Length: 286
Image 1 (cartoon, one colour):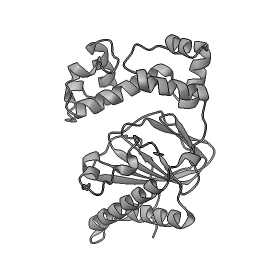
Image 2 (cartoon, one colour):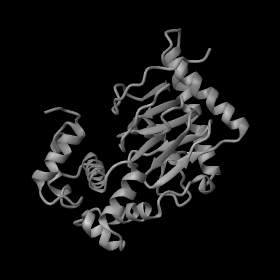
Image 3 (cartoon, one colour):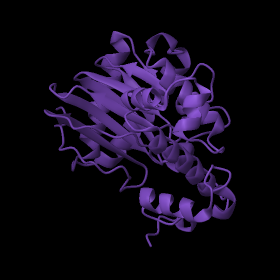
Image 4 (tube, helix red, strand yellow):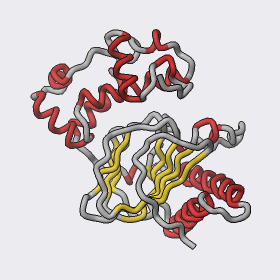
């Protein structure tokens, strides 16, 4: 029996340890802003008309496509508003997934965006597509099941799924599946990725690429979904948070990530995550 679709939950944080799975179907999907998570995400597209933007790469999705999104990647779906939108989403706690890794096998390999051949998108063959979709549906069903052994069954399905996804990711370089987005926006994103620690502004970026700031602002917002300043702030905060999660003190992080002073960094971090930089990693609210 197939797991029924759930009502969409807009939260972007995990409530349980290990993993969480959701089956959503929206008749009238809303707009989603660029965001990132502290966890890995597996996204199975089932129906609708969706382009998915992941840190400068645009993927035009087909039913059965799987997206693998790393915690360091900003992303957002671009959904056509007048089509029903269905997907299954799996959120995986970083430490939980990493706990299954050995010297020979790492279940996080499929999310490794540093690999030259890395693609966020897996487009399985018909046979694999049927298998992955069946496993994701079974995982969603057992995750919420109250039947005997439901939790153990879900754990087993989760591990099988992750092994299969890693096998598929390592077989497929995904290059032919990537769509072209705005050339200008792509160049600006790449430049920000290399120079986020420097003093950047709309004016300086426009001068760098020999365009007007109005044209740059329009093209960037149209492609990415947020303005240049908002994206730059998100990128800096994401990197800062990862560094602090790894134990780097906040006082050493803010300048490295491009913030002029600690006060501005503190305000931006608190507004985005709801905790102070010093509370990062503990999850403690202030």
